[in-house]
Each structure stands twice: as C-alpha cells, then as structure tokens.
Image (tube, rainbow, N blue to C red; front, side, top):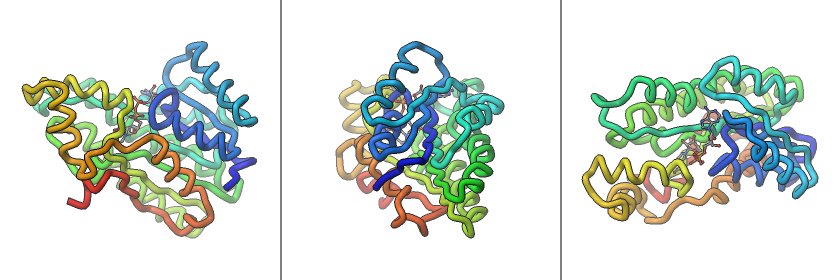
Length: 257
Ligand code: NAD
C-alpha cells in the first residue's frame, strides 16, 4: 500500500513504538513528522536519516506534549496532517497513596490530554484534504487495570473513550479514529519500569519480567514494535475504512481473560 502524498505526524517518535511507526509510514511513502520534547541535533539527524532512507520528506518538530499550546503548534507547524498517531507516553509506578501529584499530572497530560489537542487541531486539516486517520496508541491498560498504575490506567481508559467519540463525530466522513491497545512491548518505557515493579513487589528484576509483567500476557512473548507498525499501516488502508471508534488489542491474549 502506498501512502505517497500523505503526511503522518507521530507524537513521541524518537524511540520505541512511535519511531517504529514513523519508519514504517515513511517506508510506505508518507512524509513524516517526528516529535518529542527535546531539541537535540540527533533528533533532527534521525528525521534526516529516515527521509534519506525512504526518499520522503521527514522533519523533526520539537513540542512538549504536556503543554496544550505545544500540542496544537505541532500540528500547525507541520502544515498538513493526513495521519495522526497519538503515541507520546510516559509511565510511573507507585501505590495511589504514594503517587506523586506531579507524575499524575504529567501522565494525564502527555498520555491523554495531548491527544485531545492534537486531534482537535488535525481534524480540520483532514476534512480539508478529504481523508484522514487518527491512530491512538492506547494500551491493554486502556481496557484492563493493574495495581500501582493509577494515572496510566486512567489516561489510557480515557484515550479509549475519546477514540469512540472521535469515531462517532467523524463517522460520516472519510476519516477514521481507532486505538491500538498493545500488551507489553520491550521498549525503553517498559525497560524503565522493570526495576520499579521489582521494588513494589519485593522481587528480582528477572522475576518482575516473568512473574508480573509477562504474567498477564498469555502468549508469554513481548509484542514487537514491527507488529504494531503493521497494524497502524493496515488502519490506513482502504480495507480499514469502516473500522472506526474501536480498539484493536495486540496483547497476546491479555484482554481475552
Ligand atoms: P518510549 O519511552 O520508548 O517512547 C516514548 C516517546 O515519547 C519517546 O520518543 C519520548 O521522547 C516521547 N515523549 C515523552 N514525553 C514526551 C513529551 N512530554 N512530549 C513529547 N514526547 C514525549 O515508549 P514506548 O514504549 O514506545 O511507548 C509509546 C506509547 O505506547 C506510549 O503511549 C505507551 O503508553 C504506549 N504503550 C507502550 C507499551 C509498552 O509495553 N512499551 C504497551 C502499551 C502501550
């Protein structure tokens, strides 16, 4: 499938799932906009590398997804948005009575509210272009809960809800909005929570992976970034035109339990 002529904006795309999706969108011919909160030479170099590899226009736009105006500026500065992938996300693991307020606020802002601002700014562009795809990277934690992840589970359930609303509001237009709900993927975000999980449960890091993290995933395998990028590409295809307002779980069976 060719995405030539389309512009894809992927929030939080300097690493992990977002970067994988950006690479796959570029491979399919889309011009891509990479994003994160930093403004390092390597961020711009990464975009250049992707652009050169796939012969597309690839830009890096700095915008902190915890800030409403920055979320909207990202879309405006990109100038076009046919495919919006709301992917930026962070995690913090702690019991609710010890959960730092600033971590709660940051997770709600980055993992949930940013998608409201970017979607609101992107929809008029999609309407003007006569085609659009909003892809929200939610989580199995948008459908199920785990202890010690109050802010993350709240934000991801919110994203799943927002996905349904945007799907309904655009139902009569050639625009779809869907969420992908991955189980555990071995990215820096998950690598970072292994020590915290081990601490919370009072076990070793190996045990935290085996007994806590992959305990919920019946396949006992991590989901891969490539598999998620493939689902994002499928959601851009004609075959997916009537798939809207829904959540696609890619979680090795987790949410079937
Ligand atoms: P990651 O840590 O590898 O990547 C997160 C990206 O978001 C990075 O590029 C980071 O720079 C960016 N980011 C962080 N704060 C930002 C901010 N304030 N503004 C802009 N960008 C910011 O994480 P990942 O595992 O690739 O996660 C990507 C998304 O997938 C997240 O929404 C996460 O919740 C979701 N997810 C991950 C998993 C998993 O197991 N890794 C599972 C389900 C859902």
